[in-house]
Image (cartoon, rainbow, N blue to C red):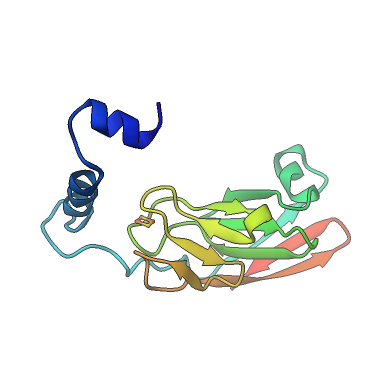
Length: 143
Ligand code: FES
């Protein structure tokens, strides 16, 4: 059963479901307007040992990991990139989708290019991007 069939079965139209979703995300719990102000961490400067098991995802093109509020990814072209982990909409943790060359938010569907630029709303603010430098097996990530 797909999403449309499920909603139909419980008597909710797709349009009504969309409205419910929008109502749920338009206000935060304190009643203020929602998101689009989430910045990445500042003063970032850490080094990842690519020979460590914990960082093994970064040995594969399209792999990624998150640490210290930063997503570090290896693109399908083999380049290392790093952006803030939190979606700029409402702070949900992003994932990296190497095959689509984007960062993606499962919460409301925002997507960002590998350069951190908004591709799909509701996010309207670009991601904070960090520098990466690879020296032998050490990957430095920094502001
Ligand atoms: S938290 Fe809403 S799109 Fe990411």
